[in-house]
Length: 148
Image (cartoon, rainbow, N blue to C red; front, side, top):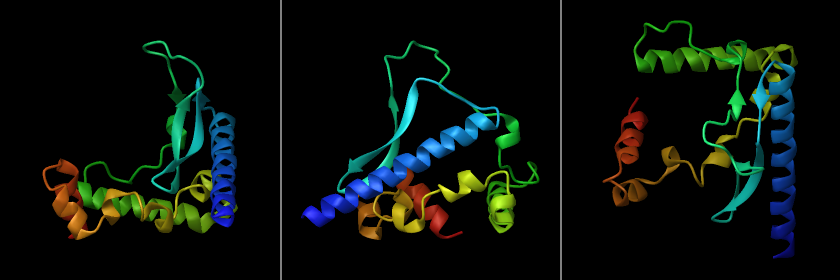
């Protein structure tokens, strides 16, 4: 039990360091982050990242500003959604291939791995779980995406 708690704490610390680095990267590239921090939380026994308010927020407060130069977008906005997803995946793959030479290297390094998403992301839910939640729109969207 102590070993598991140590592993959870290590993972939480790693996630928070990565999150701080992403915020620094965003600011260095002209972005803005106000009143919030990215923190690690225990969610059902898994460590996940999320936002936490650092103070009471006023309605309409600007939390983030991301310059357009930091948008990763598919080449063609005229393609259908599936084509745009493929184009975006290709854009991301090209940036990953550039490694540290990519403007997006720090961001891409911090993206969760599939193994991080498996326990909590709806796309990786079992068919049985999707059936249990079949009344929710997300369940049909996940089933539709799995056939693409």
